[in-house]
Image (tube, rainbow, N blue to C red; front, top):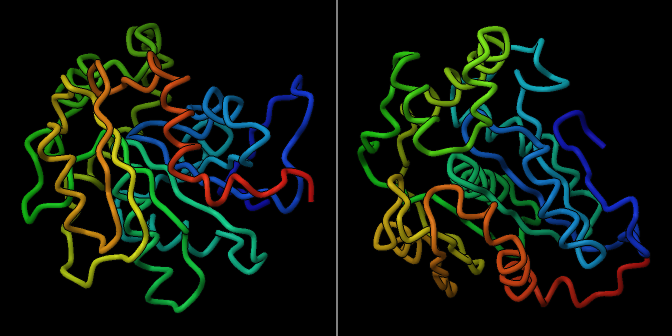
Length: 257
């Protein structure tokens, strides 16, 4: 597997996904890493093989320079997806990762290759001509304040000077990337979306999340969860069921290959 993706299966599980099992490629939030999706991956095993993107500049890629541009990051992710293997797959993206899931799907369509069979878009409003106030953060102080309020990073990491300095390059780059992202008009996708949003998310309101329907010609139901931006952590079983329901046409295939 490419350095851009990490595979997480439950090592204690009775069955692991086979080589032909449908795949769910997951894209983390700003400042996030592939390991964010370990709990979801284990909840979905063995119905789906979950592979999470590892952006440059974090964890085992921390010595690499982060990409501070959504377009460049999406192109790189598209380059490293093994679409030639002809295994059915879908995308899951949370927050900034939802934008990347959507943009990678658009790139694959432009390239004329088989794209994802579905998108699960979580914790993110649909694209608009102007970035939100949250996306436009520039100073370290503003970024750290937002991260603390949203709760996506362990508080001890932010309070420890050495650990904080380790995560700041990725956070700075990701906030520059999402803050400079401009949606380019184009035809809607033709695959189903499943939209997940917290009812108290300061980054994406329920109404803003429902607007994803305008970006596909297929159905795009919105599922509202109790919580804020990182509602996924508190509702893992329901999130996993929602994903499996949305991807039933893929996950119905036998796990062994």
